[in-house]
Amino acid sequence: MKRTDIPFLRNVEYVASFPSVNDCPADDLPVVAVTGRSNSGKSSLISALCDTRNLARTSQNPGKTRSLNYFRVPAQQERGEFYLVDLPGFGFAKLSQKERQHLRKMVDDFLIRINWNVLILVLDARRDIGSEEEGIIDFCARSGQRLILARSKWDMLNQSQRAKHTKAWEKSGLAEITIPVSSTKAVGLEEVLRRIRNSI
Image 1: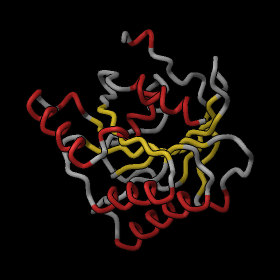
Image 2: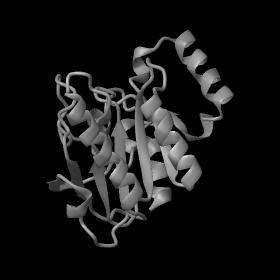
Image 3: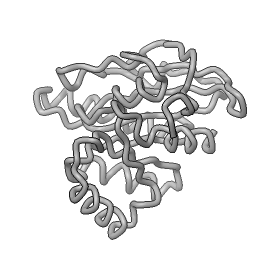
Image 4: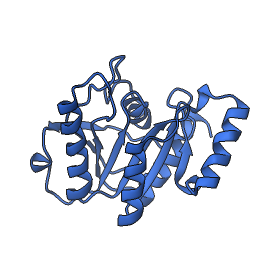
């Protein structure tokens, strides 16, 4: 698919950054949340889905997302209005243990208490799934929540590496929910957007 044919999220507006789940909007708009390890390409993917630069600010310093960042996505064609939520990244070693625990609790509280429609878990395709990602995958499986595994930076793998990872996903039973993506090359964006549309 040509980039011009991808149904990007348009005219997305920043709402606010909330320090706690208690402060988040309580209306009935559908919620699409994005989480992932610090420096996984999470912010880049959000910006790419909206076909804009720096919607969710990317940084050379991982761990910059420290709150629940809400964006409002207006209705478009066959899809209604919804919230796109950028959750804090996890696993960043330079944060203190207290800060890491605080951010992890914020994410856990969001996943448990907010009535979200689909979660996009961004994982660097060059890295193995860690314990934090395994915990989120298990939570979604047990609770019956919709999950998209966006394997980012797919363009940085060669053909043999891609084949190896694809076989691993099939063996683990994760192939059905896994989408290889590249924010810079627009790989996989149309499929992520299609699944978002089908979830809200």
